[in-house]
Length: 303
Image (spheres, rainbow, N blue to C red):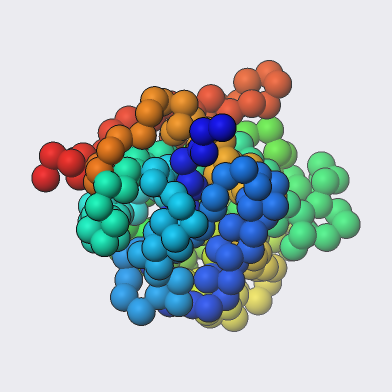
């Protein structure tokens, strides 16, 4: 029996132990559901991560892996990520001559990711989350990490539109923790105007949805910004939801990306990585995702 390529989950940049534990939980979930596929995960993009990507590669090789399908655990191609991941993989592969790898698409606003966002919304709204009149007076602020790359920021706007469609919300606005406008206070200003118009005399309500996977410093910055704004506008209810986390839907989306990457053809020999942009997923009538991918990074084998 041919051993399938190992699955390497590549998270971006965290020094937070809570984020590392969430990635470990995701790896455990995938390992339990798909014991035939060796799975590991680690972070790239920052030094001193508690779960380095290079260690994850070393561990898979020790388990006998000779080919890796790398799935970037990203919602958008943020900042320098398209260059950083191939570089991190090159460094790891130098220790293992002959190791082959290729990169799949980022998760982006995958339908299963949107399902988790909706659950986070329901959690903070409580028992009235699905009443039409309750949702109709709720405005959501979807907050991304923020990047200097406008295409990365546009992915957050695309996710906001997909989240808004058919869910009965007053509106879904976007903001960014850093590097891009609008920032969180400006986004909340826009939500306050929408919430007041939709509430029809009742107190407006804003739900801040973090559009990133793991807890950590980024989420704490977001909470501080939202709490500071809410203190200045006590007449508007503001609640901050949890990050996406290692939910089962996230595991399913990662496995879809893995299968699509492996189905593209035999994984290459040696150090080669063709990373792709965030996939454009569409909901069909049966709810399946249809991934379409486009290259965004130079193939490492051509450097």
